[in-house]
Amino acid sequence: MKDKQLESVLNSMKGARRAPVPPHLLQRIKAQTFDRGAAIVPMAQLRWIAAAAAVLLLLNAFALGLFDKETTKETMSNNSPYQIQMDYQIYE
Image 1: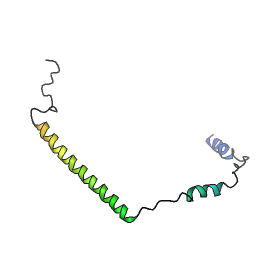
Image 2: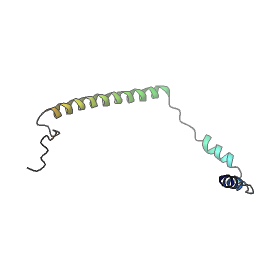
Image 3: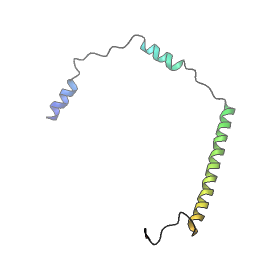
Image 4: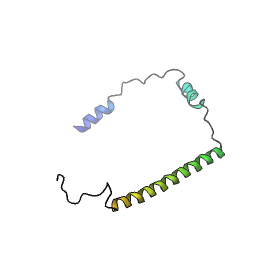
């Protein structure tokens, strides 16, 4: 049963024609892709961009470290708004 279905699917395109290709399609594709003129970034500018990205990454890591230390101190204190409710009484 499956062999017949497989054969019918494989043979279903036997009499079909190929899709017509518009004339000069390849030339238009090449013209659109190669005529854009890629901008070349100078190496000095690329170094400045990489250095700025590295500095921003380090500042973010430092700020996250400070934030983590401060929130840990706040959660350990009794007056913290993040204190865990220990008595589980919602209504008093």
